[in-house]
Length: 434
Image (cartoon, rainbow, N blue to C red; front, side, top):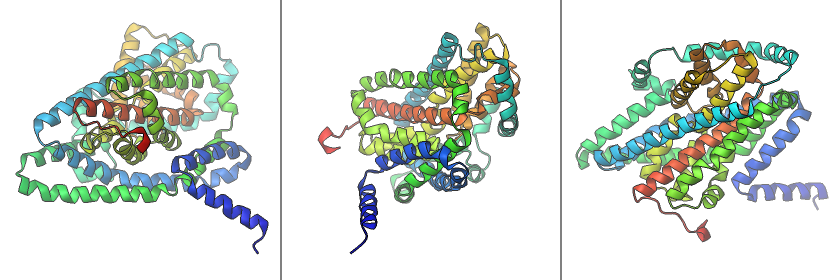
């Protein structure tokens, strides 16, 4: 007979394996947050497991985005339908992002994060994270050169699409994929079909690969969360608690006020949407990457929310790059927080500048962890606020990054549901089939 302890271990392993994936991820997230600080250096040492998991997902993202966007665009059938869906998608994303920035600014002005912070606390935070802040500023300068809106639009067009793929330039990849999909719609059926069939097979293969990678998701999530908890602990959270509460609270309010309006216009009960979508939000929260979450978002939107594959394949990959509502809220709150601490007075024109710049910066942001910190430097630079003050928010950046990513992907799915409804391509599965 096997020892009792071995029998109990086997039963536990069997139970865990029998759980749904999102339940396993939730358990891993909670365990990582609780055990991270006690594990200390051990938790930091296992972080490469989490990084490897993220790399596995990102590895799939480029071929998945290209195949799904090209097939999705070509499957729309005609340029008139493509233009209609594209226009609605862009207008929704622009409006939602600008509204999100306004939400963030309004919350910052109303609750005043950073007001009354002790001078010694300010200095200690700046000293603690000055090196990290300098590295992020250097990264921002390397990634984005200041220029006009025209320059930004020109840079969207990749001179070499293969270089864009190698450098994961998602805006360039999306531009090329959309243009390639459009040209396919112009070809005769006998010439278009072989290409679309191959890309469909590539897309199906990538989905299978994602499902394989997701089997190790709980391990990756535990390693990521444990290392974050071990590295930052809870003391930084206490120091910047007001700022974090305002930023996270605003994101939550936006998620449960604006998105339900979109869903009701789509004929989908918000409660049903969040019941079926929460595992995507949880996964986005764990990985802090809209792009890494994209495969799961596509799967849930099509299978559980009833969005047609044509609409989902077009709207969601585009949203993973250009629709950053949570990032926009973060930038609005952060600008007010940094300005208050730095003693920088913002006038009406400054606030309007923040809305415009934060919207453009969010739209141009890649859906990868930490990109919000990079785009924040663009907004601060435009306002003339010294960039070293960004050190104030580095300590809690990871916590906010996780939250805003969950908001970002929820906005993508809500938009896809609405557009599918307006196109007559929303088929919500019955509750008893879920």
